[in-house]
Image (cartoon, rainbow, N blue to C red):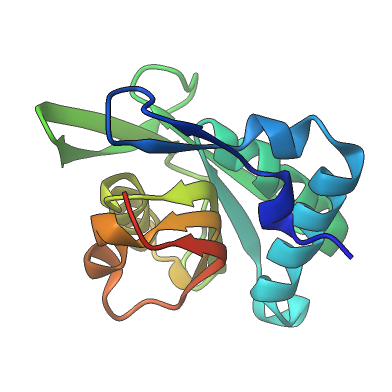
Length: 175
């Protein structure tokens, strides 16, 4: 029986020499791989009664978060880049390697006390997901778990999420 990592294509030296790029599109392009990825991520979420909302990070968090929300019969909330949401928003700026970025959520997307699972395809440095956690908490939500398909452990993203339950289907030791 195949594992999710069997569907992930690795491209050496992309986008620069020494980087092993883990391509999620090869998982999405295979019906069995996609089904397995969603099923494995859903197992990591655990008891659906302990989840009120699934939050997906732009953009691949939408791809994985939406079917999880559908399967668990939970609302799905988007975290987007600044300026992409039409209603009143709250925002959080975070540091990038060279500069900064800002993400937003609708101000009414999370209600106080809701238990939230954050979903994305990959945790690398952890900056985006840490910013999303701050947004959720500003709105009064409680982040019960952060679930990722893949982790680049060498980039130490978990350090940004100390104190939170972080689960990944696949962990790669390098960058």
